[in-house]
Length: 212
View 1: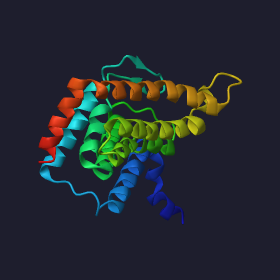
View 2 (view 1 turned 90 degrees about the vertical axis):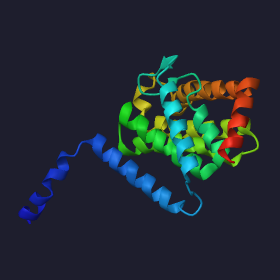
View 3 (view 1 turned 30 degrees about the horizontal axis):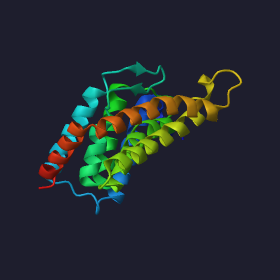
View 4 (view 1 turned 60 degrees about the vertical axis):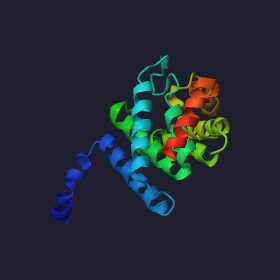
């Protein structure tokens, strides 16, 4: 028996970061399997998806504010992902959002526990794809997708970041205040930018080409 256990002993050396990434990838693969019939990527969609991720990633490094435990206020870095979902619907939007979440996990991780990783990265950014349910109303899609991301971070804050709350503050209140101020401001910026006539016209013009 001891020999059999020794065969698997090296598994104990796997770092929590590595384990979290593996579990996140497995979850993403499972979700993709469930959505395999509704999500069909063609070449043009892949190109627009890659561009959306790239633009969002660059904007995410222009930070007006960076919370020590993760989360930033940026110049509408989520907007390209909202727009992609607006073009192609919730299925592709969720997949591209999750891909972006993995990129953030690799580049700028803050890891406490594997469930927290799922909530703060693939699930939180995948929720931005909910904007795709409102393909005739980008502004409403931004609010719904933004709330989806907020809710995922909100749950993570309650269960995994309660120790960061000031003494005597309820973890629910703490998570609501922190995530509401950060994600809420991010969503508000995206919402306002999307209403700028020149930006809205550009989005609609690109939409015609993307769906042509």
